[in-house]
Amino acid sequence: MNDLNELISLKLTGLGECGDTTGEYEGQRVNVFGGIAGETVEARVIRRNNAATEAIVENVIEPSPHRRTPPCPYFGECSGCQWQHISYPFQLELKQELIRRALESEGINDVVVRPVLPSPSELGYRNHARLTVRRRLNQFGFINRITRRFVPVDHCLLMAEGVNSLMSALSGRCAETTQFSIRYGVNTDDYLIQPKLKN
Image (cartoon, rainbow, N blue to C red):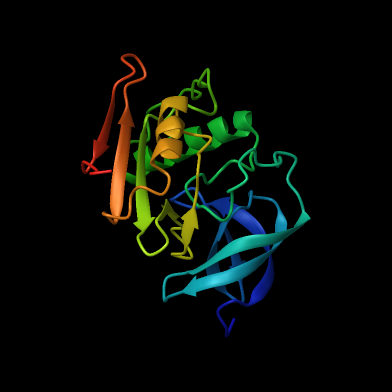
């Protein structure tokens, strides 16, 4: 692995600490966004340091039976949702595994981690959005945590409908700030926008 942007082929073997999958390429650990353990993929190298290489799945050669088409059109470009390509029941199993591993890392080995309870709503449950503004373009969106690229969005499937309605109303009206957040009271129908926008 000599170049950033290199396309590498590897078998994904594990689950990383932040929810990405892991594999090995030329003796080095690779954290891969958009994969599922057990898959063979082609991934684009985005960043490399002494500890690990970070990559994003570009092609799935051997898919997992748990893979699905992500419901969000921004998935992959926006990295806010790590697991939309994974079936929801298997997502719950992965969460249970992450909890078990976190406890074990603190020396807590004698606890049975029960299965994670499913949410009645897989989408539309978040009532808080923190958005970055590109002032020159008067657009808002999210910053991809891997590529650090700005991704303009006009709605988010994870957000409650009240948040998405406010995002639509604020489109083109946020150039006075570099970031803002929307909090929506799902029980009260109240909302809070910070910082206060003049427009």
